[in-house]
Image (cartoon, rainbow, N blue to C red):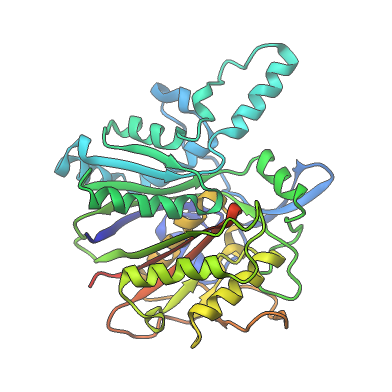
Length: 395
């Protein structure tokens, strides 16, 4: 069954809402990436924070108060009209929620535990529900008063890509008519210190696929789609194919040859029924670590021997972890809805001679005209977890 991606709510370091995010994305705007101190001892790190105040959690749902749920609510409010229309059309029991996250409310939990250790009691605003991995889906379902399936997938940096795959499966099984799907993740000390301990974080803005790359930047984001069996009146953009693999090579390092990543891309192509040459753009996982960029460039060369226009968007947003798969699929969705513009590859232009050369998107570049537009997004995670998604014009 075709799964249409009918509406998008998005908030990240690029801004809030489709219009602002698209404008800055296609301009290669990295102004949202700012250096901050206080997160990791004795280090100032460049990160992709969402600036400004966030909308408050409603008073009736204070047990769900967390920055993670505030980011999610920001995205949901952008498409509230589409959501309410779906509820009126299909009924509250036929609307599902599938989200990806890796942080949930762990920052609130960390502060709560610190308070407990000092005062032997938790702060008044602490609630265990804030930190459960299921929290974002539970909160969104309760806020909307919907009763379809609601759950969270947490597979590190492929979480929200897998959420989109799972959402399509719910539609295929006729367990619902509409799925609110995507991902949300929040900056927090636990994550930043963890990646710093792995020596994977760059102090400067990340530089994907460069000979001078030094690691990732962490970011935060929420991206929420309305996925439906029916197309929107204004467009027919669909999730055309999805592929996943798990090579289980190492707890944190990717399999060096890119075998598992290539397998995920081939599966997505097969399920979409398209050939590699039909993919007009590839949003790379592109974290700017030594190991990921080497592996991914080899995998892309295996799958696309004739080349494919590609870029990493992480210098503009940071690596948003559990939200990355949905966010970068959202960037592909924005390309299809904003004049076929493509996100440029922002880097220092110094290729690593040890890596196969890729076909980098340059500023102002657009999709080449084709009968059917097809775009791919890659997400790779710890443990050798690989996902590729293809979206485009419904056939």
